[in-house]
Amino acid sequence: MKRAIWKYLGILIILCLNLTACRGEKNSVEETDFSYWRVNVCYTEDGLLYHDPNTEFEGYFDYETKKYFPLCSKPECLHDSGECTSVAMKQKATMAGRLGSRWYYLAQGDNSTCAFRSCDLDGKNDREIGEFSHTFSGGSSVCPFYENSCIFSSWDPVYDKDMEWVGMTSGIYRYHFDTGEAELLCPEKTYGASGGAYEVYGLYGDQLIYVEQEETRGAVLKKMDLKTNKEEELLRADFVSVDTVEGNHAVFRMREGNIFKLSEIDLDSKKVTGIVDIAEGESVFACWMPELKIYTVVNKTTSGSEKKFQFKTWQYTEEESILIREGGTQEYFMPTAMAEEILIGQVKGGQYEGDLLAYMDKADFLSGKNNWTVLSY
Ligand SMILES: [Zn+2]
Image (cartoon, rainbow, N blue to C red; front, side, top):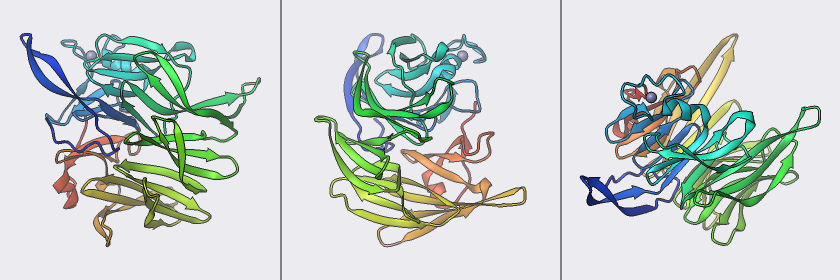
């Protein structure tokens, strides 16, 4: 089994299943039963499913073989029509996860109907599990898949009788794949805001980590015990957005008045440690994996029609932050996950800025090299 440490959201549940391996002989195979979706990617222990905005098909990248290919097992398929399972899934899926030997995904159907669907790992045997009438919040929010279910925040736009947009209804749901039941964990709220009231960011053991916007009191970072559904406030600020939940720590950006900060919180003791202050015109992204606590400060300036892009990536220790990389658009690699000694990350250069996914050696990244490989088929 891989000693992968990709599971930086916190939990990894491994089911030991006896699966048929060769010629009907029983063999012991360990299967991952945890995965999560974030920004066009489903991360699993073995590889990732990529909803690439630049291609027609849903692609899979295998960490071990470093091969990237469409989710299709049809011989000599050109992967260019809805007949292909990888193209059909790309057209429907708004987010996806893996549990055992199946993919599960939320599909946008015709006539704005939505449903959860499931298929084999190679895209075959696609079937509907049940209708579900809400939209995944998307953005930087996370959808963890575990214990035959997934948990996510929903954002549904609200229109008045003249079809004018008036607000957003948001809730947190746990969808059960065995029963097709949608369990409401946080009651729906409707605000006249462009974003919804909830964003789910990950799991820490049995605790769900999420942010709830309260119309008069700002943003609240919370945890909910998924056994009792009891919720607890961790932190309150004018704005909170979580980058990473790793073990019992979360790294988040917050604003309090005019002060922007990247900070770390201990999810048990609620102790907050500041990492870096964020200046005007800067944005910050953090990736808190074991042995790789890094953050990147991005500075965008515009002079005339020319946009300039500069970044600095720091490795954090409790004593100091060490600058490990800096440069412009062509040198940018922002890690999102790690498997063995390989980093997965976003690089610039696609039609959709920042949406190209690439991989490179961890040691090369830390020594400042730019020798990544963009996922392409
Ligand atoms: Zn195909």
